[in-house]
Image (cartoon, rainbow, N blue to C red; front, side, top):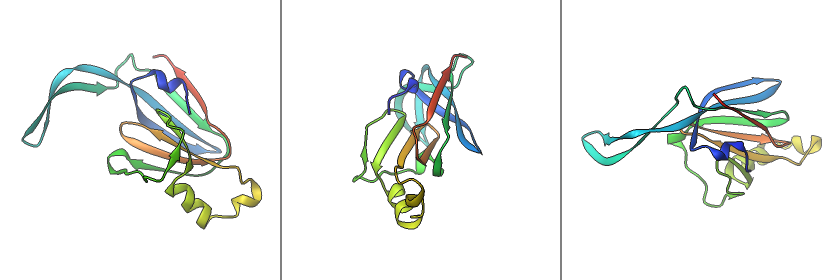
Length: 144
């Protein structure tokens, strides 16, 4: 799914709220200066640090009609090679994925309400948010 988020380098999850609607709040990650990247005792060369700065944009993604959602640490995530997606940059729409199959196989009553669900994956630097929803989210990006 293309959105205003695509105009930025990257995003960080700031907050998730679920009260009637699911609201996901993001902060833009901006490139910092070049510095050496060291993990343990090993240098991986140099790169740009990504930071949330006072000039970072803020984004709000709102899902009004959801069936299910989950949030998982980005560093613990692997993807199913058989997934079918639209190739979105920060919000990916999936028509085939393990999480969507899990919902279809274990929570089938939604089909009697409204069977037209899609899975949306919000990609951030720190978390991955998976949402099964009946309608596309509303995305709003605000300048700092």
